[in-house]
Image (cartoon, rainbow, N blue to C red; front, side, top):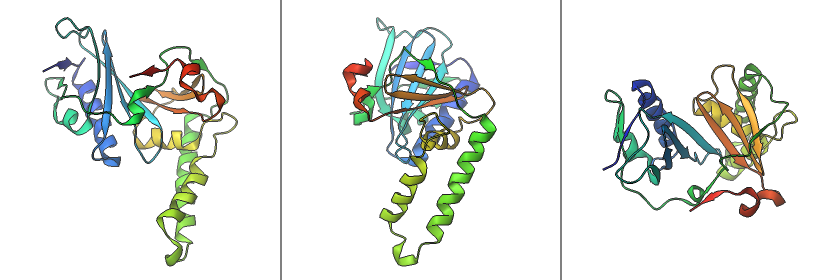
Length: 225
């Protein structure tokens, strides 16, 4: 069994926290792992937000498993969480699973450029709080017989599909970053590559792909399996 040696107990704890948050939204969540050198990228997709969440984890030594010097596997998030040993700062990689469709299409590794116009972190956190309050207020105003799943989803789509200032970044990306514990500190950045937008923080990134004509796989040079 492949065992990942994480840089320290803190990295192990952060990985466990990320997996726990993903499982909060989807008990059968899967994650895609990509490791090369001393970096491990963990990709997940919390269904409530329709975004791709990425957690970067530092390894104690360059990845090596026999003749393999890279790792690329889709596994159960729950099984991986159970295999994280925070005290030993290790994680045993569980057996691969049949990945969901999103796991076959990841953001490009390069070509990212900084985008202007992202509000300061405090304003972003305030935007999320205001949006959550609006959702609660509007749903509570509905008559009980009209408070259906379809009605709630419609209100949610309207609110979370709004864009942040003039950036084109959907508010749901910021909401996801907040819910996953990424929206902390003051060092936030917005980047684009092809049809992808990525909100990057020191604790993780959230990416979303546009639906425009540039959204095709060939135009993005995506990693596809």
